[in-house]
Amino acid sequence: MTLASIPDADYCLQHVRQHDFERYVSLLYAPEAERAALAALYAFNVEIARAREVVSDPMPGEIRFQWWRDALNAPEGAEVDQHPVAGAVRAAISKYALPLVAFENLIDARVFDLYDDPMPSLVDLEGYAGETSSALIQLAAIILSKGVDPGTAEIAGHAGVAYALTGLLRALPWHARRRQLYLPADLLGAHDVDPETIFAGDATPQLRAALGDLRATARRHLASTRAGIAGVPRTLVPAFLPVCLVGPLLDRMDRPGFNPFHDSAELSALRLQWAIWRSWRKALRSG
Image (cartoon, rainbow, N blue to C red; front, side, top):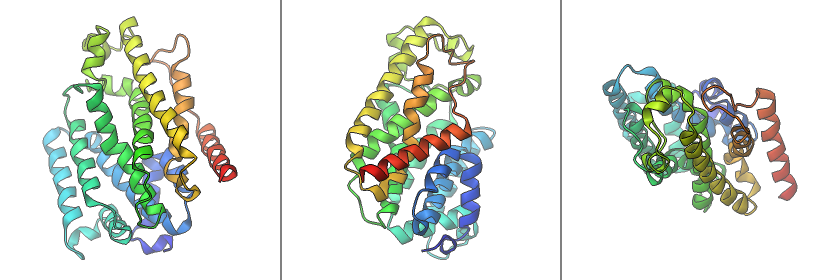
């Protein structure tokens, strides 16, 4: 399958490049035959993950998500195939026998994004990350194994949670400005953190301790990923490449005096690409 055999593959590729540069770089290391389907998968994720950004309140977001549920379940040749991302991801689902329930669960998990309800617990947060980030890695691995379940669900679970928790830590200032709280209530309660101090952008000692615990959780999942990645076939490594950024990002957040509201942990585009290239080269040598 060439890039052109998935409808609107070029559109999806550019959509991912604009809105999810880390996954865009990673898919460039995938075989040409599977790159279009990966672009469609990641473009679908962009459409769902950005819902809060493009709607004015939860109800339009709920309607948007229902449209996607209906689109994924529409019969072959339906009008929704004219939508560049819907048509592409539906073709990828058909070509690689991707489990539709994983897409539906991802949408259901993202409903949380539309509201300002607090994340109840760390277990709930890990579950959210599993249904979104981990599921995306597992679906990418299925594509890279040409539609066969590669048996990577466990390592994809750890990898996705590590990546998602790190991403949420990076986005803390942005979420705080719109009074959205992904930090789990049980963790905040254990450190006596008042959510209003988060919304005010006040990096109190209590909040810093809670964030340290969350980074430690991300590192535990990262350690489990690293322990199992040697057993992942080299052909599947592109699905996991963005996770190589977790360590450097957490290291930056761990620096003494780091202010989560004012100091950036982000990597430059050049360093990001270099880190992914280095991880890919290491996978080639070990394979």
